[in-house]
Every structure is written in C-alpha cells, then in structure tokens.
Image (cartoon, rainbow, N blue to C red; front, top):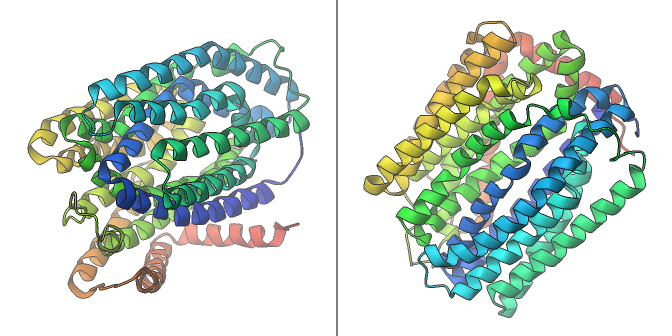
Length: 508
C-alpha cells in the first residue's frame, strides 16, 4: 500500500471534495431549471422520483458496505495486507451473490413503475428512462463496489471524488447541450449512461494497476463482516427514513408536488452533500484513531463535533434566509405549480439541522460497531416517520411528510446523543447538548432578526450572490466566535491541530 500521512490524505480529500462540490452545484443548479422550462414539472418530478427509488437499490450493499469499511480501518492502519485481502474476499463473495438481485430489481422496477404511477408521460419513455438510469448502478455494483470501500478506508476518497466530479461535469454539460439542441429526455439519459460506464472503466483500470496485491481467492474472513445483517437493518431504516417523503408524495399527491419537494431538497441537500464530502476527508482518520488510540480519538471527537455542528448551523442559516429569494428567480416563468411557499423553508431547514448535526454521534456508533445494539432504535425512527407522514399527508399535503420527518428526527437525534455519550464515551450527554443549545439559540436569534430587518430584493443572480456572500461572512463570524467563547478548551485544541496541519501539509 502506498504510504501517505493522514494530514496529506485529509488535505487531498477536503480540497477535491470542496472543489468538486462547487463545480457540481454550479452545474446542478442549471439542469433542473432547463428541465422545468423545456419539459415541465412532470418530467422533473419523474426524474427525482426515479432517482430516489434507485437509492433503495443501494440497500443490497448497505449492510456489507458499512461492515466492511469499519472492519478495514484496523488492518489498513496496520498495513496488514493479508487481513485486507481476506476481508475483501468475503465482501466480494457477497457482491457476486447479490448482483443478480440488483439486475432483476432494475428490470422489475422499470416495468412496474409506468403501470402503477399515474402520469401524462408516455409509458415507453418512463420505461426507457428508468432502465437507462439503472444500468450504471448494476455495473458499478458488480465491478467496483468492494474497491471503493478500500479506498475510503485508506483515506483515498479524493480518487473517487475527483473521478465522480469529472463524470458529473461531463454529464451535466452533455445534458445542457442536448436540451438546448432540442433532444428528448431519453437521448439525454443515454449520454448519462455512456459517461458513467466510462467512469467505471477508468476506476477499474486504476484498481488493476495499483492493487495487484489484493487476493480475492484468499480465505474469506466472514467473521470480520459478521454484523452485516445488523448493519443492513440500520441502513434499510435509514434509507426508508431519507426517501419516504418522495414515495409518499408520489402515491398520495402527484409528480408536480414531488417536483416542488425535490426543488427544496435540491437546494438544501447541496449543503448536506458538501458536509458529507467534507466529513469523508476526516472519517478514515477518525475511524483508524478510534481503533488504535481511544484517548486521542476523544479529543478529536470533541473538536470535530463542536466545529462541524457550528458549520452545519451556519450554512443552513444562510440557506434558510436565501431559499425564498433564490426560488423566486429560479422558478420565474414556471406556472404549472407554485414553488415559493412561506412555511416550507423553515420545515426543511429543521429537518436538515436535526439530521446533519447528529452525524458525529452516528459516526461514533459506526466506529464502535454497535450495529446490533442500536438496530431497534433505527426501526423506531422509521416507524415514527412513516406513521406520522401518512397520517398527515392526506390533510396537510407536502407539509405532512415534513411533520413526519421532524418527529422522527427529534426522537432519533436525542437517542443518538445519549447513546454515543453514555454507552460509548462513558460520559454525560450534556457535553453535546450544551453545543446544541448554544447553536439553536444563535439560529433563532439570527432568523428572527433576518425576518424583521433583512429584506432581500434581488432582481438577478449576481445581486443575490453578492448579498449571500456578505451575509455568509457575518453569520460565520458570529457562529464561530460565539461557540469558541463557550467551548474554550475545544477552541484551543482546534488551534493546535490547525497549526500542526499548516506546518505539515505539503502540496506537490
């Protein structure tokens, strides 16, 4: 294995993730607008509905993927190639067994969806869009799934990120050109298929060149991934939780309402995607440290939790304030359904705050491999979400599914905080609750102040971006200065880490 410092790997991961997200977001904002104007809300709703359903197909690898990743941290840190090969062999066996199920699922989905979902879009078009969207997933699952886990464990996320960013840029550029040229949605999806198959081919060539030492014929270490079934249960519940809203809206409302939901999700999930990419830059280091040096991990955990949560609240505060002005510009001229709503921004920002700010506790549970011990709690979260969402969607529509999401998050966020602190770190959960209270207080004050005194009348995107840039600097300064005052020990530790980081980082 190529040896490279954790600091350098983290730097590569963070830099590639940030740059990738900036480029992806810039292009990603353009595409839905083009679809809305050229194809209407139904096509936009169809694509978002199909994409969300395909997320469920990831459940086939969800259990073994997380179990394998956690199992790999220790042998990767110790550079134990034999153990790595044995874990990879066990994982490969699972992928080969379930690959046919994945393919069958894609075929069944592509046939059933046009039959059961009411739409004015031709059924053959719906079938073609679904089958074309599913092929890259099947091929990637069979060929590269297990190798991406090893790259994650080694801290080489930047390789996957850079490749994904490049393919995303190419796909979006192709979409823009084809839409403007007047091609239909099926041709546009074929371009998506072609570019993603080339991405998979390139990654496989990279693996073949740099990982010749991996022996998939080694004795499979089944015990290392023995908790995959418990992990699968957790991943299933998490997947249902994250994607229930779109499915419920698809069947209880219509695709235009799905388009509205997806528009808000697109805006807010850009931030969560950025945060996830940022977190992945550190996750391998935290995972390896947890398995090798527990005291050091606790210090890193507290610093990371403090400032990641602060970043989450700061970003979503800006997103909340600028959501409505952005949508007014973005959906101008789209008249088949209203996208601007008074209450949706607040409901959405609450769901993302509760979800993203609990991520550190969730990661700790994964590092500790407490999958089986917490699976019933995950099931409870999903049940709350489904029951409340279905009960409320009939009367409240799109608000109803968000009520369900907020209710389940309130339960599970508190449960994760208490469990991670008391059961794993053996300390009071007040350490984390204090940070939540401080950040929510800042959020409430900023929102009240902004609603009363900040009036954003942007007639174009450049003006809106300038307003957002100034507002972001003020909000970030406020959040990070206040949390540093209340968390002085974490501020000192963070400053020490930053000094080491600056001293050691060397870019080629």
